[in-house]
Each structure stands twice: as C-alpha cells, then as structure tokens.
Image (cartoon, rainbow over all chains, first blue to last red; front, side):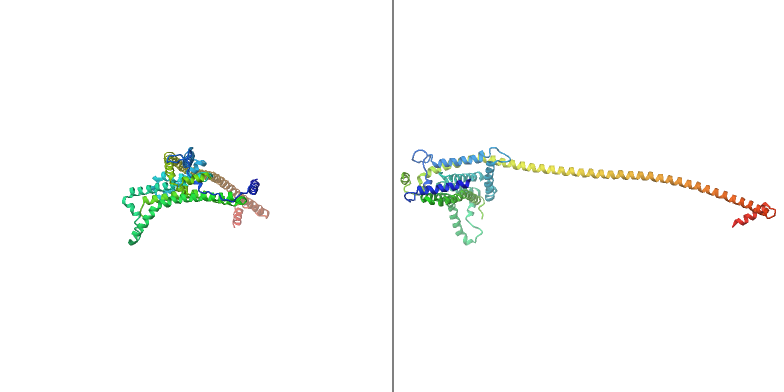
Length: 266
Length: 175
C-alpha cells in the first residue's frame, strides 16, 4: 500500500515537472533568509521587542517545561514514556558532570542542565521546517559561551585564589619550556569561549544553510528535483544527529572547563 | 523581491543575519530571559522532583532486595527445620523399630527357652520311663532265663535247685 502510494507520488512529481517546468532556470536560493530576525508585530527591533527569537526561545522553554516538569508530574516509581526521557536526560547530564567535573562539580549541575536543555531543545525545534533556530546565531551562542567562561574563571579564582594561575604553569614540563607553554595555555584559555560558541552556531547554521541550498536546487531542477530531495533527506538525518551532538559537545566542554577551574593542576 | 531589498536596507548589505549587530541586544535580552526561566524551572521544580523520584526508586529497589533476601533466609530456615523434623522422625521411627524388634526378640527368646525347658523335661521323663522299661525288661529276661533254665534242667532229668540255676544264669548272662 505504502509502496503504491510512493510510486503514485513519484509519478505525480515527474508529470508536474514536465507540465510546470520552470520558464527560466534562475536559481532563487536565499539560504540565509531563514536566519533573519524579525519583529512579531511591527517593523523596528529594539532590545525588548518580541521577535521570532522570543517566540522560538519561548517554545524551547515550553518544551523543557513539558519534558521535565509535566513529564515527571506523576512521580511514578515505574516511569512512563515522558518520565523515562526526563530521567534519562537527568541521569545523562548528572553522570557527565560527576564524571568529568568531579564530585564538587555537582553543585553546578542545575546550571549545566539549563545550558544543555536549552541548546538541545532549541536545536531540535530549529529542525522543524519553517522554524527559526536560535542557536544558529553567534549572538546567542557567544553569550552562552561567555557565561561559561566568566563562571569558570570566577569559580577558579574563588576556589583556588592565585593557585588558579597554576593552570597556565605546566609544572610537569622542563623549566625553560614553561614560560612558552604558559603563553600558549593563556592564549588557548582565551580562545576557549570563541571556539565554544562558534562551534555550536557554525554547525547549526551550516547544516540549515545546506538544507536551504538543496531546497533551492529542488525548486530549480524541475524533473530532476528528486535528487536534491534525497540529499535533503540525508542531510536532515545528519542534522538531527548534529543537533544532539553539538548540545552534548557544548555541555561536556563546559564540564571540562569547570574541572579546570575546580582542579587547576595538570 | 521586496524582502531582499528590505533586508539589504536593514542589514547594511550584510548577507549574514548573524552579523547584523542591530539585533544582538534583542537576542541577548531574550536569551537571558529564557535561560533564567529554564534555570528557575529546573532548580525549583524539575530537578528536585526527578532526584526525589530516582532516590525513591532506588530506595524501593533496595527495600525489595532486602525483603527478598529476608524471605530467602526464611525459606532456607524453613527448609532446615523441615529437614531436621524429617531426620528426627526417621530416627524416632528407627528407634521404635529397634525397640519393637528387641521386644519381639525377647518374647521369642523367652518362648524358645520355655519350649526348650519343656522339651528337656519331657526328654528326661521319657528317658526315665525308657530306663524303667529297660530295667523291667532285664528283670523279665532274668526271670524268663531262670524259669527256662529250670524247665530245661527238669526236662533233662535233673532236679533244679533254684539258687544254683539263678547263679548259673547270672554267670552266663554277665558277659
């Protein structure tokens, strides 16, 4: 039955391609349009205007609320589906924080869980066609990374005082090398938030742009549009993976940085 | 393409909306709002609740395991008691059987002894009777021999002296 349906659909696509062939093969591809920030009401955007950013962040918050609060509302000893996922997410991040940052990193668990849940929900919501992906914007990921950077630096100095600078002084290296290594370590420390934020925004943005480019090809190719449609399917599957993996990478790197702040010795 | 011209006018010719700095304030403001809301939701409601559920489940599992261990110990205990009772019953049965056997043996021995006694008494009585009969028979033989000898002597023409005949017979029958 499904097979027949598939073939009928394919035949329809081919016929429509023949009948409604585009008059001119102009590639009307605007892959970056999907990232435009626009006000929900009116035109001008100031810092408090409700925009599509507001909408999709609110949806991400709602999704987090639905999964972790509504999902666990029954407090069942034998969990249902939603509660299982909520517990899985909890256990996944809790174990990550405990394993990577150590026992004393556990008190940062709500903070790290917040980051993870926001990023993963924003990424997955962004995969809905016609949606807006908040994590594709460097402004958003830069703030996320800057929050981590500031937190880690402050925690490092509060916990270890000047000893936190030992992070840059590789005591296991030969003495003449240490100043050089200190400079390298210092640079790498300050590059962290840059790579941390651009990795996330870049991955998400690139994937979505690629989808849009293939979609543009599909519109322009007429009869052969099934080729880019297959490509879109494949890239979309990859993007689903990326959406989770980038959230995971962002979170585990946060844990690693936190470990450096809590235990600065190499 | 109205939107394109609009974008070009708005974004200052930038092709990437990500680099349109005029929207940064807006995005950052709403991001901070979203993060604060999520943080409050998680730290106040969601995480304590899930932690409680997980702890409760762990407790339930631990309790159930302990209860299972308890029941298992009880089962082992019951089995031991059963085995002990079985062994006791078997020993009791053996004891009773041995006792009964000994009783029967004693009764049997007594009956046998009594029978033996009776048999030996009877045998002694019989022997006595036989001896009497034998003695009687010998007496009779001697009397018959004497009479026969006296008759023979008389028949041969002699006169039988009873005492001489008796002595002669006794002398002949001695060997």
